[in-house]
Length: 572
Image (cartoon, rainbow, N blue to C red):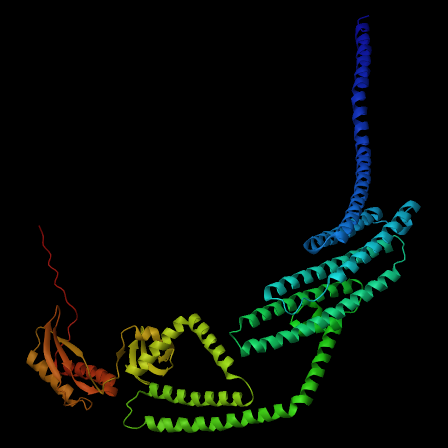
């Protein structure tokens, strides 16, 4: 009885739970349907968008065709500038139509193979392909009709503008060829036989490459001739302007040939011969040069050129080389003779020059003779010296501007050679360095220190600092200081010092030796001893007198006191 209410409550709870679950399941089912339905909707929208895109492309193609037809009618009745303007618009419309057809073709195929296309899609692909080939042919004919060289009597500015339009047309023709290649690839993917059109395209590209290469070679020859004309008459402004135009034409032609070769390579055609010609004509180095066929073609062409040049100009070249060698040998001998004569002249009593300056003068004379001989030899074999000397002057200006510090050292070296503050083998202190001068150039000076180190110092640092030449004089004074105790006999000490100095054989009688009581120091009575000796005996005398005075003081009982200090203590 007591359990009955609990049992009823459980049943009510179960019923309520089932009802809640049923109510909660409804939105869950709706959510699941939405989740499953979303991709379907997205797919349907994508298909609709693609269909709308194809429909829009068809509309754009039809509009472009109508525009082309309208422009063709206008061109028939137009003249002068209006005809040129309509013709430009017609060309842009045709190129735009080619791009639209290619885009439509690509959307239609959409990466499918021929087996994946249905009959309707294959039929549409055939129609698009046929229309595209016809449009490409019409555009090609139109572009070829516009290609022509400008008139010879045009001014430089008008000629440059005409050539710009010409190369723009050639660039547009290249775009048409590129669209045709992509259209053929799509058609072949759709199962359409394009072998005949590919062969036609190969022939067109081959002809375009041949024409471009021939024009490039001809224009390069024109550039060489114009360069010679400008060199002969450097003040001719018109010739310089025409040369600039021709150089620009070479650059544009090379660019056009290079793009044509890229199209040929995409068609699987051999371009090694044209790559070799392009490199030989313009010097442009690309990765294509590393291809075996290109390298073989280049080596073969160079070999033939060298052979022809050897046959044609070999005897004259051989005679020029022999003449150059003979002239250089003669002037080499003359340089040696001039060097010896200069050395003998500088050794005379009239020229009181330092060894460094003598070496520099001899070197300048010898090198001047050699340079004159080289210039004469070059002029005899047909090399113009005017441009060479002008180029040397320009290079000298650039080098001088870049090497300002070096030129400063050069100027300091010249000042040192002229004023001769020191010479080779002199012991000097300069530029923060002490040692013997072992060598000197116009830029720097080489020191050999007393501990056998080689130090190279720029001449600018030496000339801008104090120069102390230790070996400039033949005799030197030895400065010695000796101290005795306050309790020692001063006269006895003076006598000992005089006897010790006089006994040394290196001490000179003149100038007279000075021995004086110099100062009363804190711990000693100090004497100065200043004998004179030859320059080379300085250090030996210094050391010998110091030793002899110490030994004699010890014998005579005269002390040399240590430093002393008296300390006084006060107690408060």
